[in-house]
Structures are given as C-alpha cells and as structure tokens.
Length: 418
Image (cartoon, rainbow, N blue to C red; front, side, top):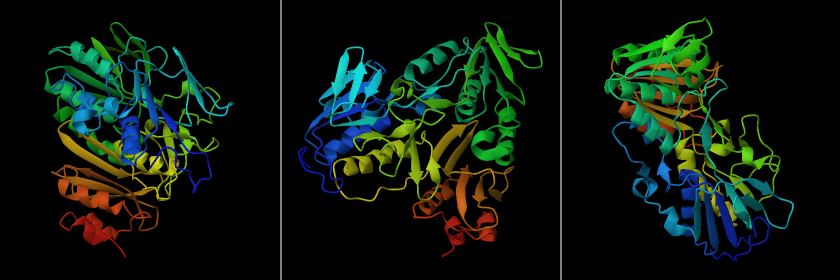
C-alpha cells in the first residue's frame, strides 16, 4: 500500500510518515507490519535504551546461561534498524503535543512530527519508596547487573513470588546462590492465579532449594538486608524487587487519557480511546478492549507479537477484523513449565485437571455457575498447551463440560461443548 493511499474506511488524510515511540517487540512488529503491508513512507523510531531491540522473557528465564541479550533479529527475524528510515537509540520521548495539525513528540534533541504516532514505550519495573538498595529486572542492563552480583554462596532475597521472582529464584538457586523469597500475600502467584491455584506452587520452592516466606511485608531495603513489618531483618548480599511493572507513559503527561496504572485504553485496532485516530498504542502500554475477555492489560508476549499487524492495517485504511489475541503467559520456574491462556477472575470457579502432587496437571477457571472457561493454566502438561491455545481463538469464551475437562486421561478438546 502506498503511503499516499487515501483511507476510505476511516475518511482521514493519508499517512505519509509514522513515528514509532519505543524499540521493543511491539515497536519492531509495528515497523515490520508497515513494510510488509506496502507502506513506502517514512518511518522513524525512538528508543529509550541504547542497544538494538531484544526479547525480554529470556532476561529472567535464562538470566545466568545467556549473558548476551536475545536479539529480535535472531528471535523473530525482524531487523528494526534496517526496516526503519531512522532509528534513534538512547533517545527517549519527553512529551507529546496534539495541538497542531500533526502529532509532535519532543526529545532531548528537538521535536519530531508525523502523520501518525504509535506509542510502544513498554513498561518499567516497580521499585517502592525505601527500596533504593534493591535491584530490579526489566532491561538488559538490569540483567547484567544482577548476573554480575550472583555468584555461588551469595545471599539473594527476592521480594515478590510472581512470574519474574519465581523464575529468578529458580535459576539462582540452581547456580548455588542462597535464595529467600518474600511474598506479601499468602501464596505465590496469587495476583495472577488467585490464592487457591497459587498455593499449589508453594512446595516447588523448597524442592528447588529456595526458602519461601509468605505474608511478609517489607518496609525497607538496606545495605545489609530487608527489614520486615514485624521488625525482623532478612540478611542479604543482593536484593531483587520483583513486585510488578507499570506502563512507561509518564512522558505523556496530560496529552492522552491514562488509567491509574499509566496504561492507555485502546479499542480493538489499538486506537487510543479519547484521542485522534492518528494516535495508536501497542504492547505493554495498551489496555485493549477484547470481545472475549473484556479489558486485557499489556504485558503479554503474543499481544506484542501479533497485535501490531492489525493495528497497521487499520491505520493505513485496510478494512480488516482485528484478531482478538488471547492473554498468554509462559514461564519456566523452579523446575516446572507453565502456560496460562485467558484471564482468570476472582469470582471464577477453579476446576483442577489431574493431581497437582503428581507429574503434570492443569487448572481451569469457569465462570461461576456456567460452562464458559475464562482461563486455562497448564503445568508440565505439554499435550494440553496446543489444545488450550486453540480453545481461545473463537469469538467467545470456550465452553467445556466440567466432568470431561477434569479427567486428565481425556483429550482437552473432547470436553468442548458445541
């Protein structure tokens, strides 16, 4: 599609140049989508980090056995530096103005304008006040600092038993590091999976040589360790704060409507709701409207991988339905392989598939009193992964027979209801 093609579907001026703000997976896929769909206009990219685009999941999963970043050119075959006309690394956006004829983004080196902008600035790790001595893990530079500090015999305290905390705890303990994990709630992964399913992962910690302390609230991180609310001190040489991430959107100030966590609410084609059609958001910054799941937060690898193509098509005026990409998390932690499809809700009813004390099991979240399944977690059960993925490709939530779904001897597809 020529950059000068008029968009009949949107009745907006043609897009001749695009400014992509961010240089991660979502940004790389945006640039790739523009070129693959025939856009021959100008594409400029701003990246906050000073290194070429890389994949983030290996930072924790392979913290100690992959000392170099996993470059996206190798991982997904997309060369952002070659596809864009200009790539400015180490040049974060400082502000956005929508008052002129075209959106304008300010940087330390000046102002850039374009017919359309795509916000793909990702997220950053949370570090609460009083935790200044703690390391975080979200960037390649973070991973290098943490990797350098973890040698056999080092005392590591991980604050947070979520996805990142569990992954780092497992690889560190396997390398001879003395690991303690502090979790404020009553169970690991309680925020993602709820306490019932999260509690089933607690025995993994001791089996992997990790000490897990739940219900512990951190008040301060110092040079000698972590101070807890009950007055105890957990001694540490290294402390990792693994208590979540927030969208990196402070630079937008009041230019776009933001949620309380900083995310940007977008519709199915990633147009920012309440903003001009020339402003899109993809990846970790986007809170996407889903026909199947309601509002889906960012942070899902599949969303960053697959969402930009439909966004680009809509931006360029091609009438196409956007794929409703299911939320998806994969994790290798404490000797186990996990895959979560869908979005659990606290009111859902949990049905277990198999015995969590044996090898390989799954959990299914059913809407209360019904057959609709909101999410499926597989643990060391690869034969269920493909089936679970396919179940979340329809227009609505999958419907399963609870009795059949509970039976690990039956294929998951056999439980599907018409």
